[in-house]
Length: 145
Image (cartoon, rainbow, N blue to C red; front, side, top):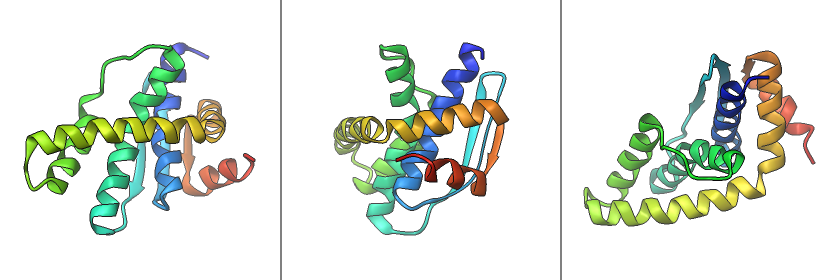
């Protein structure tokens, strides 16, 4: 197991587990050479859906920080998605957006802690297989108490 893939697997697994927690359909996860992707479908649930999407977007870095034991650099794509959702929720007010993101980072960190056994299990399944489809993801998550 190499460290970049372990971090990438944890990062992608946390996106998937948090989104699964909110009932989003996870289509696929993959990781290769320290990079990964989580494909998912966001149901149209208005403002609640935007909040859930923010949590799912922020979860990757939060899980990586937990593994590292320190704060790391935020991936631009994930943060930009969270920022865009928060901006929509705040009627384009950047001050409100930044405040919402700080609160959501805290709330998402609590969810990552709560769901860590699922994240850990899914990350290692992803390391073992490099790519998991929605059915395989559901199977792995069903095995965690």
